[in-house]
Length: 268
Length: 297
Ligand SMILES: Nc1ncnc2c1ncn2[C@@H]1O[C@H](COP(=O)(O)OP(=O)(O)OP(=O)(O)O)[C@@H](O)[C@H]1O
Ligand SMILES: [Mg+2]
Image 1 (cartoon, rainbow over the protein chains, first blue to last red):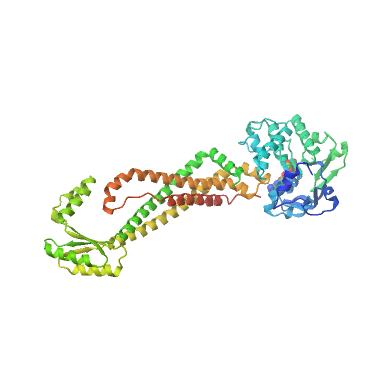
Image 2 (cartoon, rainbow over the protein chains, first blue to last red; image 1 turned 30 degrees about the vertical axis):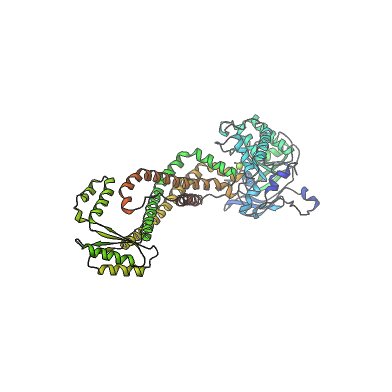
């Protein structure tokens, strides 16, 4: 794991969710190489007769940067919501670090979420709080000492380019800056997995590229990133794995720059 | 206590101080009723305690009772086991004592009593008894006294003790009633303010859930705020009752106190602390009930 894992969220969840590697346990040597996420035959519908996911299979390896795309209503948000247990699957399993998310008890859901950073189109900041408070809260729930929180929030704000803006109220920031605060909050606990649901949806194209760059930097430091978007211009920026959601299944667009034909086939 | 939770609670209270102040003022009204009832109860209780332990008898004498017979009775009484002293109070002395008490209390209505002739106040024998005298020997003594021809009437003060005891139990009942009122108003007022505050901070709660806050971390500040509302309301009520007490004390001491022979006392400290703690606990419970609809996962 990461250099700072001694203080990371993974170690502090004494009671609830635990990653696969448990202290004192001897696991197979390849434990760390196992996929971080596995969807097995996942079914999900909100209303009878209108399934969103229909037997979806998907494997995501540690350290990957994956785009999730598909038409509006294809189930991109649903997929992410299943991961942080805002929804539960109807059938099938989702394994996160080897643990079945659906079988977590309600009391261990918070411990799952401490391992997953989330970023949304609507930022989801507490607007009456300062930038610092918005980021620090992610560490306060872990019960870390204030001194440590201060230094790590400082680092996180620096990573997203907001060094020295900690005292500002969140609501006075521009959209792009607010999204940076949300990203800082998502990464300050050093989660294993970072979920982004249309994080650039409210931003102009240049800002969108900046934010994408930020996610790429975060990914380079080892965090697995799932980036849901229907903005094709972002998909073209770099060669990445692209998952298309269509008819309730995940279709893997092969690695490599997508050909014209494939892009045209994207459901719209 | 988690500092992040207390910080969020104080921040929330500062931001919505108007709401909290309003709740505290409306709550303190019912706490004032409770504190007042308790104040009355403690004082009546103190009075009945005092009168129970005085062990005093007054034998009122017939008008124009012959002095030798009175002296004889007095001597006889002094020999009775359990009697510590016997004192003769003449009509004139009784009148004088009453007047001196009344002189302090400048109450026009009572001045009419002063106009009464000296004869209106019967002479009496004030009999002081051992504090541990048994009930049987007391009733025996009263019966014997009644048989003396010079004795008009024997005042044992027992009736008063009984009446006071009845008053105390009525007061306790009233306090119980006010406690229920307080309870209901705390549930209603704290419950609804917390629901309102929760609604205003929906966004905050959503964020907390998202970043993996536990149930208690999410609820903590709301419970603290509810508890603080209850405790502050109780404390405010104590301050109000205390102010009323201080304002009324001088007057009460001049009018009522001399007749009963006690000072009107304020609520004892343990009772004050208990009321505030009761308020705090009730507020927390009410806040918890107000949070029922909060789904944390
Ligand atoms: N809470 C809900 N209750 C009922 N139906 C829902 C709910 N959430 C989503 N849906 C439905 O499920 C389907 C998938 O929705 P979802 O939000 O996952 O799509 P999406 O791919 O994220 O779309 P978009 O690109 O517009 O964000 C849609 O048809 C939507 O109407
Ligand atoms: Mg969506």
